[in-house]
Image 1 (tube, rainbow, N blue to C red):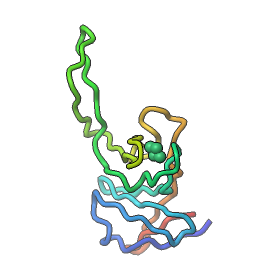
Image 2 (image 1 turned 90 degrees about the vertical axis):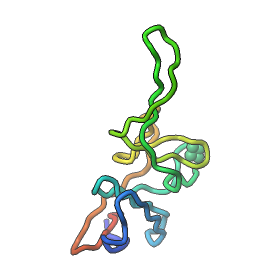
Image 3 (image 1 turned 90 degrees about the horizontal axis):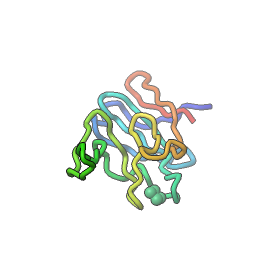
Length: 121
Ligand code: FES
């Protein structure tokens, strides 16, 4: 294991993503609600650049008591990364697919040392 430098802490604003390739594979580092997360930029579905998709709150299907569809809403307590190829959604906090927990992005540990962000590979 080694720590690979990503960027200065101030270079990654909350809500932003940085994809680096100096690790031997593309790895995306996310800053979300003040925490850092890193995943391989490779979708377990068909290999798309999952981490380059939009980040958005979980979409909730609203079904009433009678079973009728009542539209969609957002659950801001959980954010997803949406793969741009086919729309698979992965939780920002652990990389697990929102619908099939067997599918997950490869996760890496992120450390901050003296204001510098590193990914452990
Ligand atoms: S390759 Fe990512 S959803 Fe299909």
